[in-house]
Image (tube, rainbow over all chains, first blue to last red; front, side, top):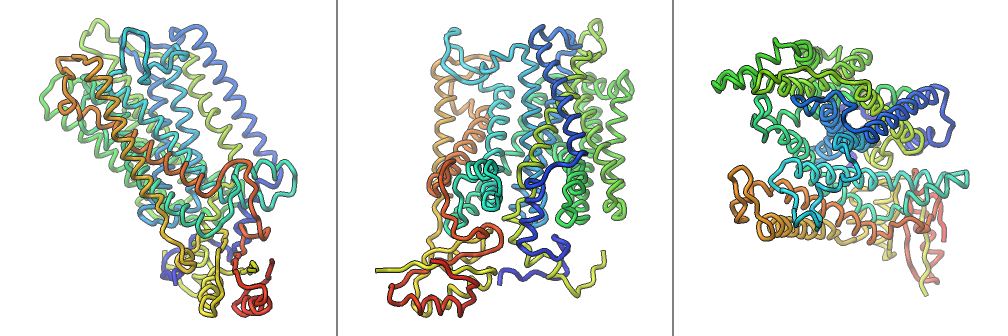
Length: 461
Length: 170
């Protein structure tokens, strides 16, 4: 039978659940009223979102002069935030696509919320791209449309145009991947709906799904093919983002190591964000039996691996700067580590290279407080990484008379803090209205990986 | 005259065995519904393999061609530019710079074409009323639809019970 699995493999669903228990546990948040903690967090997120709207309106209404950019530092927090948010999104696709191809069953209790994180993070990222254009009403100009500006087409040799295609493809494909997986779960909520409104909305969302054998056959094929094409897609997206820098001739940006280094960094920060979100979510929604310590442990291992890859990349960059013999390249790196932005560089090094090494200890990997704290540290570190790459490479350019520092204004700080609200408002709504765990997929492993099937086996871990 | 009956099961392995046994008795199993994908169910029912991945490949190949055609037309045929001493006079010389967008557009077409095909073929659209046979068929129950002569109804009901159906609905 297909349900046979070695009893030595770890339990993925604790608490002797039945199929019906899974449905009950996943639907409970949707069918009950949120508690006061949810309202508190939601109010704070809404306030941040409101602040974001004000800052965007002020930026668009007045112009980019309200930011701290100057003629030397033309990109700063805007692109830092863009790259940071896009990177965070990558973990969702890694969990749902790459771990599907590798048949990692532990992805099943976390893929839904990680994909939701992807969608909302990419929205935040896109908001910075549109905002930094200064004139968002002409945001369609990078698209190849027939126009009357003197028969000008977009330049397809430009990585910025590649980025437009990469990000929009990534967003829309992630969205349909997520939504297609949600359909059977929406149907389960629909069939249980007691109120008229819930029946109506979940009928519309589930689009008439019934779990017939043919539908499931197609569903599985679609999931597999989407995973197969999302895997190179997600790797291409951050590679293209890195080429925005790497194809420029700016010392500190013009390096061929950027694509793999950016992808590893993206997965690193994305998993940290998944940890931050899920450690809270599993507690608040009582999902500790589905998102177990084992799941947290596995994600910490990925953080350790990708963090080490990122550390290697930092050292390689430094080595190559020296080895290249190019004095401008050498200066860019010496300036990063010892110049006026030394504090940003060393924050990055401490947070991204040193702190994940704690994860070699299985005791720390399985400790929720350590994991949560570290996930925040990693995200701070990854924000600094982008800041270091962008601002320290720009602020001392080829003409020493134009060397300067960058100082963010309250508008830029507001946009960044506000974008966290832009992320959390939809995420909190998601935890109330959407099935947070892909229950129809999780049910497939209940017999093989549930705690009942592991009875009588001693675990030594 | 044929009669359709729905046997309700509460375990996927019992359902798979039931299909095997009913088939050996000559009872036609036309469809089965489950709350999650049950491995081997399509094979037990004798369903053909879905061709949706072939469709996806064709959509993707269309995307590849369209993207290359678009970039060739815009940047090489209609308005070639010489940027940084790197002129775009031929497609074959320019193709390395066109690969990222060609790839992204291939994925875009393959993914969306396939998903739209899936929705249409499986009749998934907002406003479609589903045929919910049992209110827990997307929770923890499984439905097996069988067909037989009206005159055989009692015999079919008896066999469904024998193979483990917890309930029978018509």
